[in-house]
Length: 266
Image (cartoon, rainbow, N blue to C red):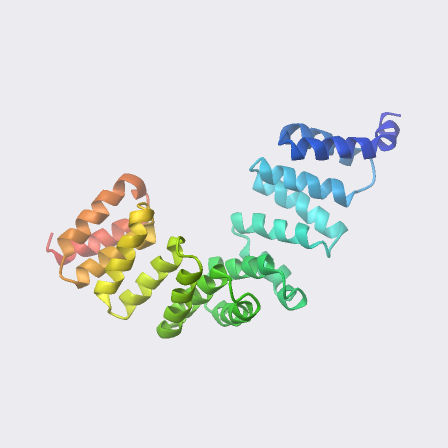
């Protein structure tokens, strides 16, 4: 009888949960949605809203479980697919994201977020065989979204790792022009300049990044390397020692320091 009553009032219960969600009463929304889902047939709307609610409650494993159920009920719902991919990336499930999204950008060439999620999955997984696929997708994305700094950053990142430093430089310089306040393309360009042995340029770029983001680990490490190459290993060590105050648990920091102290004979 209770289940029957819940089914009769299901539309009202869903609307209440939706109202709770929009008013950021996420725990209340979750309670109503779980009652609704337990009462009867599977509902995509209820599953999707519950997944979104769990995202806002910062519970990624539960959110992923509900969003997978939602996507099974409506496999073509792009918002559900993208939200699921975003949460799976938080859990390190890049392989699943790549498998699900790999064919979708060509079917949805105007959806920039879809391209970025797949590029993020390629980048986070870091498998060498994926570099060519990532570069191919990033090149398509640059053509489709020429004003997107984020897409050019991804392409610059992949080209840097493939050793195409000049093309990486061109893409990152364009990204900086498109998004001058974003430190990421400058940090990557600083690393590219370092690999090209343009140490003074690398130092200038990386110091600009750290002036805005003092706790940018990669920029800090790259700056230390530039200083070592410029004959200032003690200055490099000082910068890394100072970084211990906010990055002491980072293995890369200690490895870099070890190399510098070895060079100094300490």
